[in-house]
Length: 105
Image (tube, rainbow, N blue to C red; front, side, top):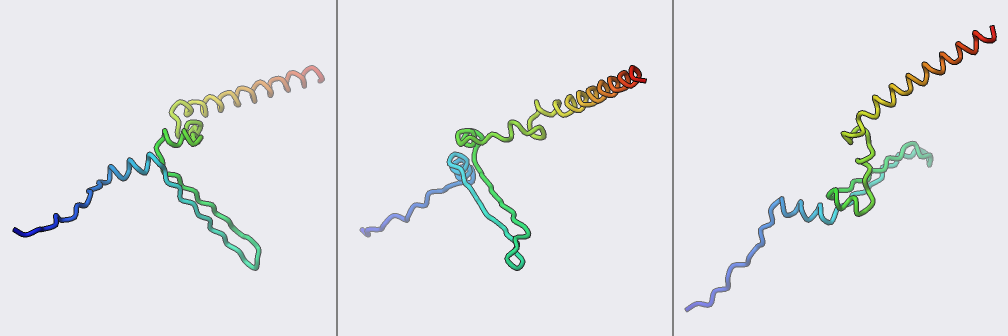
C-alpha cells in the first residue's frame, strides 16, 4: 500500500464570484497626468475611478448619478420644462418692457 498525498486542491473562482467581491468591497484607481514645460504647469488631468455596487457607493456617500439629468429618467423632463419656463419668462419680460416704453412715450 502506497501513501499518496492527495493532489492539491485549487479553489475554482469564476468571474461572477470575483465581480461580487469587487462590487461588495469596491476598488479605487487613481492617477494624475501632469504636463510641465520649464516648471510651468500646462495641463493637469486627474483620473479617479471607483468600482463598487450602487449600495456600497451610497454607503460611501456617492450618489451623483441620481442628480444627473442625463442619467436619471425622472430628471430628463426637467430640461425641457426649464427651457419652456425660461422662454416664458423672457416673453413676459419683453412684454413688460414694451408696456413701459408705451407708457413713457
